[in-house]
Length: 339
Ligand code: P6P
Image (tube, rainbow, N blue to C red; front, side):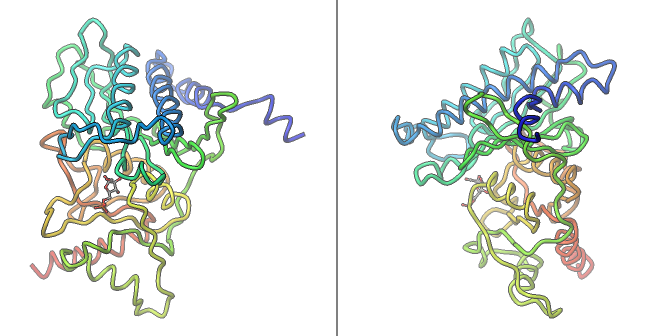
């Protein structure tokens, strides 16, 4: 009977968002329409990523993005698909993309009240070897969307009203929060629909995994070095943590969300602000972690309290299980006290 229920009463992502939005009488369905366009972009990228090896889409496109990294064709394709889907939704006013140096201000005739910050294909350096990659997005509501200026979208992450990521791996999984918990949906290619498979995701309070690029160890600051040491050589009699590092943020964060543990991309002497970008990596993933009962810390404070000064700003990030992040916060607090 359960199997029949599944087949005949599908909780698609669209139905979920509609249900959520029906809780707000003033809602006109704009967020539902916006999210359906983001879902379209994810379906397109999922299909392109799955065919990448065959369609030779993984070759270098020769151009470089604002981060000075070689752009792969899939990067460009994905960015174009998302920009077109978001603009044509008629629900956006400003777009901030990892692939575009400048923010995109939508034609006033086509504007809506949302600003979407996104990395269309994060982890794309991993495409050639088949490692999971993903799209990350965060959404702000902009009241004065007709006259909005760039300064007005440099908002703290806590002002986001929704965030999510889509991971293109062995299956295509979209994890979303519109502010009341986190839910996961898996693409059923035979239906072309994202079906709810992970209701109400909660991250374990403590985990057994730490996730960091140990290759940067010689450049770490003291609190990070001390914390990683504790993971490897615990002094409280507990067992050492396992190291799992994929090098693709969406994959590392997805595992952290489901299994618990901590993901770190600390500052180091080479990159004093770390590597990950505030508006379309740190904020969306921190939003999701808090909604799932975890937390996210920059080394100085709560990640979502950060106010970016430019759209490609970077920040160190420590996110995951609540208790694990508390431990590294204590080490940074110790260092701050020691002055
Ligand atoms: P590193 C991928 O390029 C990315 O932006 C994130 O997806 C990932 O978490 C990080 O960089 C990996 O960086 O320096 O460890 O290779």
